[in-house]
Length: 586
Ligand code: ARG
Image 1 (tube, rainbow, N blue to C red):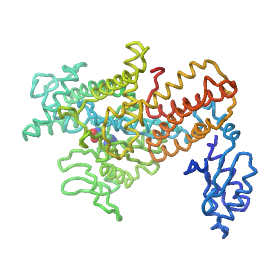
Image 2 (image 1 turned 90 degrees about the vertical axis):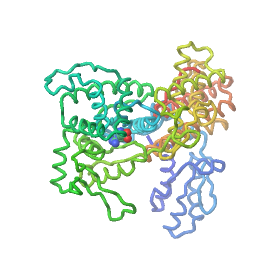
Image 3 (image 1 turned 120 degrees about the vertical axis):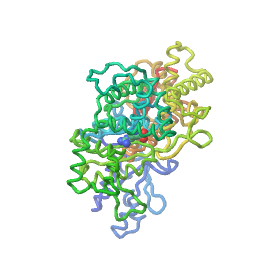
Image 4 (image 1 turned 180 degrees about the horizontal axis):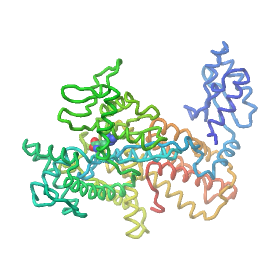
């Protein structure tokens, strides 16, 4: 299915082809000056150059031919040779009628079958999920939904931080506290207990204590290092204990990510590649890529045209330990093998990891691991408090993730009361609606900012029912739902009769295919947020200016209800791509 601008580009392109000029010159786009025209084509200038003619003369010829085309109500030349185009109401109505019952709202499938893996989340085991995890989860999940909607097989991998020094720190802390546990007995032959002798709360509490102890005491640090190495070398008691950490942590992570409405197809982590690292290292050595440097083994990644210094990727430290780069490179190696139709991996992490990914990507390219796979890193900015410093709780601590969601729910509930909304909901429905609005508020506010910028986390602003917010969008969508409920049955495929007051909304409804394609291509969910907000606003004006249920002309009423239904379908689609659900009532 062609989008509207594609359809128009074909019409205008055909005119250029008649002169033996390329059809691309007839490319039509939404006008930069909606006050002057609906669409524009700038090809006459380039055509004039190619045909060695005056641009206005070329534009005049194009206009003369287009004027007779039934698609256009008005065709005009502006400035040096811009062609301004306005559609007839019938043409616009015909186009919209063609996509009215399309569940994809006119957006074509852009890809088929190929796999794209998205690496986001990256939470660390035994550490409570906190406010810093909001962005990778929200952005990664939205990108995954977009990639999937485009037609790819999209897989989300949480890639947990489950293998480094923190694991050894916790193990040695437990060993000091509970030396009698079987996990620490050298002569124990198993089996180890199924259930952990501690709960997740204990684990979470122990980690910061263990980490502090290691900072203060070099002996403790050495113990933790040793425990990490023993764990990685497969010491059974330590592995059994680590399995407990994993089980408890994953249960807690699932609880938090479910509450946020973010999901993963793959629950792997750094540890999963441990066993393939030696063979992988041999391969790298055989290719001559792993070289010795001050006792360590590194992969050089400098390029001739580097403007800044890019240090080598540290593969094995001089003591033989792996690094973050080792596991990421090995994970890439494994992913390419596991998913033969993989075409892309998108990593979403804090932008402070830009250099790390530059090193990993360059090393992967040098090793020819990714000849058929595109690697993308989306580095996001910091979530700041009102003071412009990283967001903290009132007492200066890091806000836990469950507290964050609770705060959003409470604020949403206050806002609903202020706005006298949802007064006929039961307590249960009220809480559930507040929860949905809270999640929508933080997701929309996050996605609305370009990923790489730092932004201020302002819960009051983001939960407001006015302005460019998630709750505003939900409010407008719920308004349409209620309107359609009141309308009851109406002909869902009613023809559209577009009047003056319907035009802005009708025109906007044709733009989603280009908006979506742009947002997907540049990994910019904020473009989708902008569009969704414009659509909500446009619906609101339409609702204010036009008779809908009170319209006496039955065909016009049905046509307007049809526009409402299409607006709701698009709001539902675009918010679902952001991971936002729309309540039935509020
Ligand atoms: N666990 C890492 C961190 O806390 C994030 C992991 C991101 N993904 C990756 N493949 N490196 O910083």
